[in-house]
Amino acid sequence: MSAQFSFAARAASIAVCLSLSASFAAEPAPLSGTAPVQPPAKKFQLLFLTQSMGFKHAVVTRPTNGALSVAESALAEIGKQSGVFDAECTQDATQITPQKLKTLDALVFFTSGDLPIKPAAFSAIQDWLRGGKAFIGIHSAADTFKEFRPYYEMLGATYLRHPWTHGATVINLDREHPATRMFPAQFEWNDELCEYRYFDSKKVRVLLALDMAQSEPKLPKLVPVSWVRDYGKGRVFYTNFGNSEAIWNEELFRAHLLNGMRWALKLDEGSTEPNPDATAKVDTNARLAVLDTEKSWLAKAAKTVAADPPAILAAAEKIAAEDKARFLKLHEQIAAAIAGEKSREAALKKNQQPGEADMKLVRSRRAEIIAAIQSK
Image 1: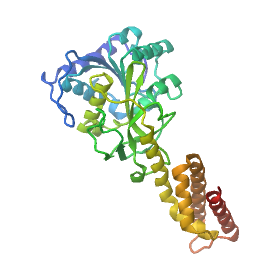
Image 2: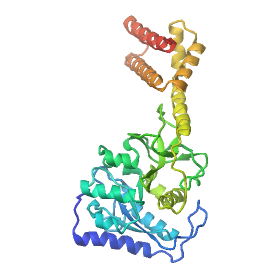
Image 3: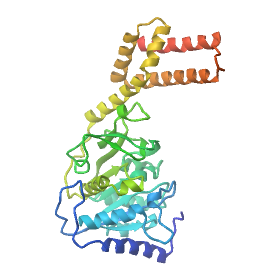
Image 4: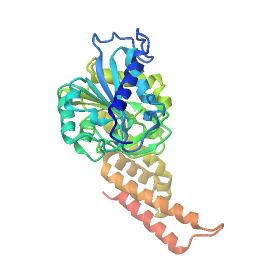
């Protein structure tokens, strides 16, 4: 999509968004999943940017008749129903200027790729946010400016890939926070979920994370789903949720998004203190979950070299629980060995036995891994 729009097109996109907001009932009704709250005396002004300079999600794709996208319509509806904000929707990042920022209380990004925001304009965004405003990132906001450090440090991470295309099990690490108090301690989420780069759990408060013991595929590390942080006097709220149209029609997601926005706008309080103890536990449990999938192979490998399987498994569990770097290296070795053995087995013809050279290689690799586990 072109980053440039005519003046008429820009005005039309804004007018459609604002007229849609005005079309809802004058008396806002509380969303399910949240307790009724008194709307603020004055509505906040919010700019919702849904420009795609990379992959374009269906929920931010506007129909050919010029109407708003699913996400834009939903956010305008949330603002009107809650009485918290008016949403101005745009798919042109060049509208974000120092002058425009003076009129806004919050920026919301559901974006992708390198947006046409000049360095001076981005510096203005940083200063505006540090001055006490709100930044909300939804789903592919992390797939934006992926190698632009000031942006991903402001947001908290950048997108790497989405291994969980049909959902996974999510752990609620802070059930007291406004953005996540509507969720139980653990729940299933049926939508695309992502893995990140440049994420530092020491700089944010993780609200939601994946439970690797109950999810497929399993990764031996913490994978956050939603987090919050301070940015100067401003607040940042990010949620990975929001990929599909069904999710935007899900009241729990709408409650999660509204409450996260209320928190970012300082209508509600919730901690931004990093929670390293909680995230470290999730991280450790993820390694143990991955190890569980490798235990049967490790037991066979131990027998191959006449080692005691229970002792080897106990030693591997200790490494997984106490030495992250060592376990990650061990996991890579095990995964490569398993993949190699499966590949050779698949190449054999029916009833064909592996050759001695193949068996020697298998025994050698198994011995190396068992020795690595046994080493002090």
